[in-house]
Image 1 (cartoon, helix red, strand yellow):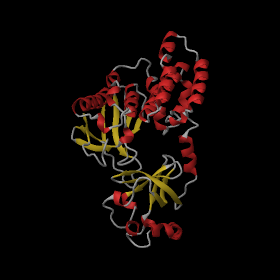
Image 2 (cartoon, rainbow, N blue to C red):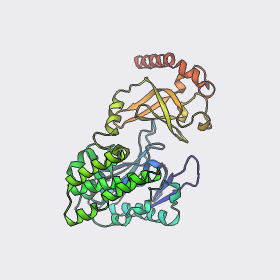
Image 3 (cartoon, one colour):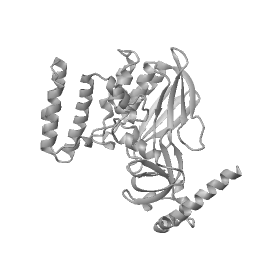
Image 4 (spheres, rainbow, N blue to C red):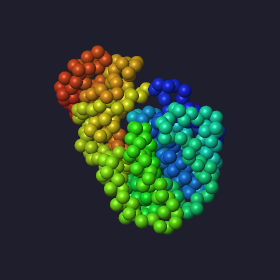
Amino acid sequence: MRVTFTQSSNEGVFRGWILLRIEANDICTQIWTSSVFDPYKELYIWLGQIRDSQLPAKMIIDEEGHQVELIAEYLSDLLVQFRIEPWLCGNDTTTRLKITTERCELIEAFHDGVIKFLKDEYQPSQWSYIDDLSNTNWGSLLKPSNISGENWRTRLAMYWGGRGRVPETGRETVWKQLTLEQQWLVILHDVLLWTTQLTANGQMTEAYALVSLYKNLPIDLALGEFDPSWYEKRRIELNKKYGLRENLIVRRTSNNRSASAKARLKTLKLGQLVDGTICRIRSYGVFVDIGGYYVLLHINAISQQPVEHLEKVFQVGDWVRAMIVWIDVEKGRVSLSTSDLETEPGDMLTHPLLVYEKAEEMAARYYQNVLSRMENE
């Protein structure tokens, strides 16, 4: 089995993307991974699950584009079934790859692929200034876990629970299972990222204040002289003095945007018109922020006529009105359409405001057509 990673040299649409190629016997498959996969923390967690026999182990390698899921299931103490299946790809139900392999072979194939990638062609400049794949100790994956079956779960909690997709193993559940020292180490991790953000924004005084407070935290923890109440008090004083807001750190706890996103999802319905803002443009479509929830408007759903250059239709920050045409509540996926709101093919490309003006009328017509099809069935 052979796994290879190739970094895209395209400075435009595929900036920061990596092509994952998996070869096994006579079977081969290739997948573009997006920046969502960055910086491979979830790959580390997934391989750790396989190493510790916490199966089945599942990982969505790309939420944005090709949308596939890597799945490893238990067959015996030595063997696993490894397969790649589409994830929320509409009518595409084709399994990309399905093999039986040894657990150690699967882990080593991915490990060797990552190490070769870092050595031969990894270009940190293609990523942000804090995303460095070489800062992850990939070699430790090949070592037995010190506490069988526990390390991957602790790592999952410390890395924000796999972006909150799996609540039962996500940080909102596992956080309380961490020791007090582990929780504060995660807080220190957050502060490091926060300090980087402040420095990048030119807020040097605030950055130095944070460093001054937290620089002795690892020493206090190592010596067993950690006083959480003192740090908590100083943290509140420092935030008040410099006007710092800790919600600037990307957090994924039960009280964060993950919970608000889930609440937002429950308000959405098929055929519903939504207003939003274009937040990302990809080769296959645009992502729209509809009140804190990010949904996809696929390139094929923009107009009834082909769209060749997305940048000529939308720009980041543009307002858009679209209709919800597909929802998977269980997995939290929503797809939009503006093509179904066109009175004439191509209106979105030439007269988008006209499409928005007549959106209510066309949405009502769409809904009636859906009802008619359901009655006929």
